[in-house]
Image 1 (tube, helix red, strand yellow):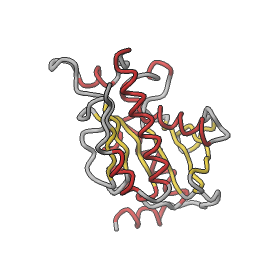
Image 2 (cartoon, rainbow, N blue to C red):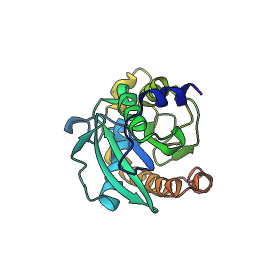
Image 3 (spheres, rainbow, N blue to C red):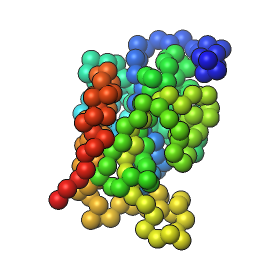
Image 4 (cartoon, rainbow, N blue to C red):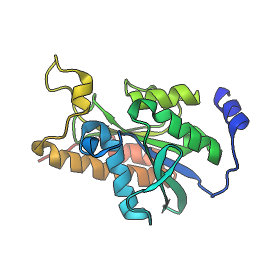
Length: 212
């Protein structure tokens, strides 16, 4: 109820016909391109390559690099926030208000340190799980019922390592194949969710594990 009231007070003209938002979380800039925290950006890049005329998402809108795509017959906005991870909610809520979309039509893709590399976990709603981008989105929107696709990046390589150093570290060569497996499953999950079958996506993807 709080979220709906917030949107109705701040919504702009919802022209453009966007029916779904897919937002990948990450940090902008070349120094972060291949880091664990940027899994969400990686999936958005794959979606743009496959579905959007704007292959590189160069249009700056809603504090994000954006592009439109039609996925499973649904006109979709792809987003890569330029706010840095901890302020991702600024971008997401601005786009939601403009297009007057509820949380159920906003899919968030992010990394998860509690999952091994190669594992993808889909949820219809829930807590932020310690992911700061999700935390900010939930705080600024007043809602936690966003569907989300979480991509495993593994636990810290050493218990004394700062968490920020871990999530901002690049993937190792030995992690390339399980990461590619996860990104392919995340892409499939997004396609299935936008097509209206999140339960089917959960049944197919949540139990999948990378094997040599």
